[in-house]
Image (tube, rainbow, N blue to C red; front, side, top):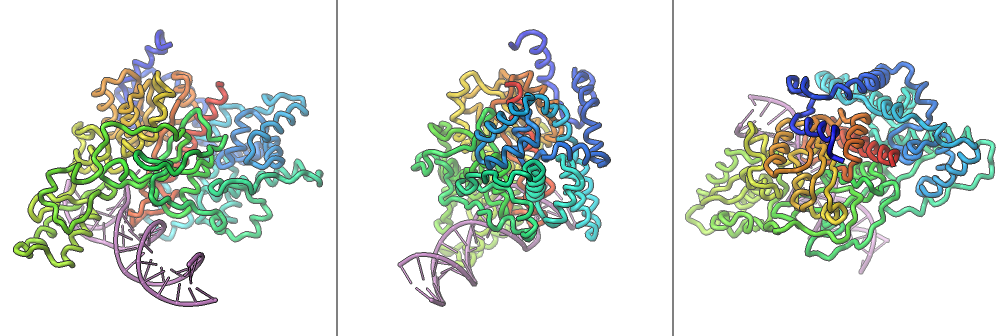
Length: 602
DNA sequence: GTTACGATGATCAACCCG
DNA sequence: CGGGTTGATCATCGTAAC
C-alpha cells in the first residue's frame, strides 16, 4: 500500500510544514497545487456567501435542519436521508433510539420508493456550508470591540449571528434565536433553540394532519447524565430565556476524582454505556479543565454524543495535581499504566528538596502546574520573612501561613535554607511525563517553555486511558491530533509502544510544532508526521484527502483551549464562548466530519 | 521578560431548623 | 437526625501593565 506514487507523495510532505505562516519559500516546492485548486473551487464561494449573508437563508431553509447541534439529525442526513424524513423519524421515535429511527427512515424511503440517494445532500455542498474561516473574522471583530466598551454588546450579538450563519443556519433563524434566548446565551443554547424550532416546524408541516400519532417514547428513560433533549417550540416560548440550565442537572465532579478508575485503586465504574452515536471507529479523546464554569461540561458532553466525561486528577499518577475532564469513547477495561511508575510525592520526585523542607510545610504533592511561575521577588520576600526568625525553631504561625499560602499558589519547592524556588522547566517536563529537555532548544524561551508545558497533557494519565488501544491496533494507528501542543498524545502513544503510522498534528503555535517535529525525529519514528497550524484550515476537503491517503483516522485527540474556562483567568473567563475556548466547536466539527467521512466510505 | 493583579466555583465544617 | 444554609478556606492548562 505504501509503495508507488502515493507513498512518494507522503515522503515529500514528511519534512515540510503546511502551516499557513512563514513558509512561503517552502510552499513553492510542495505539490499542493491539486488541493489548492480544489479549495479555490469549493471554499471561497461558500465562506464568502455565508459571510456576506445574501441568499444563504434560502439555501439553508430548504434543508430545514441546521448542521451543528442536531447531531442526530445531521448523522442521518449524512447517511443520505432527507431532512424532512429525519425530522419525521425522530419525532416518531424520540431521539434516543437511533436504531428505531434508522428503521423508520428505511421504511419511509422504501414507501416513497425512492432510494435515499435521491435526497442525498451532496457531500461537497454540505461540507462547504459547514466550513469557512469564520473565526478569523470573529476575532477581528472581537479585538475591534475591545477598544470601544460601549459597542461590545452589539458586536457580541454580531459575533454570534455570524457564527450561527457560518454554522449553516439562516440569518432569520439566528436572529430569532438571539432575540428569544437573549444576547448572552451560549452558542449551544442558541443552536438548541434553532433546532428545536426547526424540528417542530418540520413536524408540523409533515404531521399536522395526523392527530393520533404515537407519542415519542423513551424521553424520560434516559440516564441522569444523558439529559439532552429538545424543547418544543411552544414550550420554549413560555419559558424565560435563561432557564435552559435550570432543569438540566449540572454535572458534578467526583470525589475522589478518579474517573472510571486509576491504577491501584478500586474501580468505581466497572461498566459504562456509550451512546450509539458515540461508538467508534474512530475513537476520540477530548480533554479540558475539570473546574470550568457551570454548564460548560454539560455542553461539551452534549456535543460529544452525550458521552459522560471522566474526571481524573493526575495526582494519582504523578506528584502534581491536575484536575481534568476527559470525554472519550474508549473501553475502560484492562487499562494499564506506563512503566516505570513516576514518583507520587514531591520528596520522591525531588530528593534534594528534602533536606530543606521544613516540618511545618506538610505538602506531599504539588498543585496544578500552570503556565506561569512565581517571581524572583516573591521568593526573595519569603527568604527575608524567614530569616527574621533564623534563631528560633520555627517561624510564628502567621509567617508560616504566608509562606505556605504562597508555596501552594506558585508550586514553590525548598532548595536551600529559607530558600524556595519555582520548578525548573525540565522538572516540569518530568512531572508531566515528557522526556527531559523535550521543550528545550530550538529558539524557545524559558517563559514559552513554561507556557507550553502548562498547557499540556499529563502523559501518564492520558497514556493510562489510551493503553486499551495497544491490543486493538498492534500494527499501529493513524492519529489526528488537534490542539496537540507539545505532543502529549503522541508521546503517550509512543511510550505505550503503539506505533504511530500517520499523524496529523494541528497546533497554532510554531514553537510547539517545532517541539513535536523535533521529538518525532529524535525518536526515529517510522511513520509520517504532518503538521498544520490552524484547526480552522482543516476543512472537509483536506480531511477527505488525508483519510483517503491513510485509510481513515483511528483516533482523534484534542484538548481545546482552556483559558476562558480556568479560574486562574481573572480577565476573560468567558466560558465556552470565549475567544479561544470557542474552538471547542471546531473539535466537534472536525470529529463529526471524520465520523461522517468514515461512514460514507464504509 | 518580569511582576503585578482577583473572581469563580468547589469543598468542608459549623450551624440552624423542623 | 437529615437536609439545607452560611461562611471560611482553597485551588486554578492566565492576562495585563509595566
